[in-house]
Image 1 (cartoon, one colour):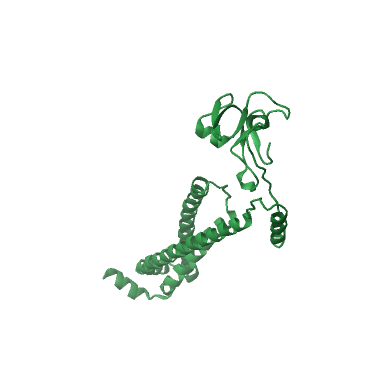
Image 2: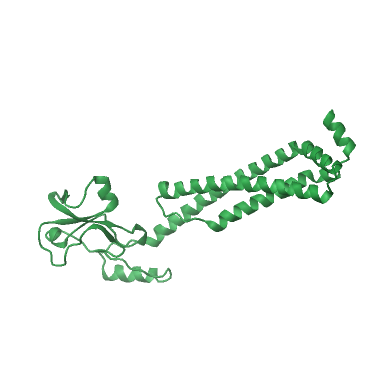
Length: 258
């Protein structure tokens, strides 16, 4: 059985098995074909039909970059069919040219595929996608900040009126400031928490359902998002309403009545 494969149903055949053809299937392939242990499947091998019984179902680690196949027959089943050998060689980046030269010099007919080049191209593409996503996220954050500033400016008169009433009722400047800080902190935490939940759900769906990758919960960035959102809301809120603390009561009350 290939390294990194785990049999989830059925049993692997013995090394000396020489009976009727058996086949091992990847569990996703078996599920897609509607096959289970004991079912038969017919495969055309160079024009010759080969019927084999499903002996087991495997969970394949496709991320290992090793040789993995969705369908594996017992060796005796394909003994008479034409075949070639395949192998993997792991080397450092600096040693790759020398390894490539030695293999092609000794075995001129061997086809050598340098996986690192393909992985490098995939990494470059994923980097470009990451930049595009971060750019879109930056534009979204900038738009959200503008909306937040607009809402603060729009509520400036109401904040001034509340602050004046609190002062007339005996509240100190520090108490009014504390009230504003708590209010903006609550707004920031609620907004960041909602954005965090929606972002995590969207990220989970994109990673697991669209990209078919393993989901890892980013706890550090998640809590950082909530903290930065709360701090940014407090800062912008206080910057927009700082003049409220020094507003004259008679001017604010006349403006409210008008």
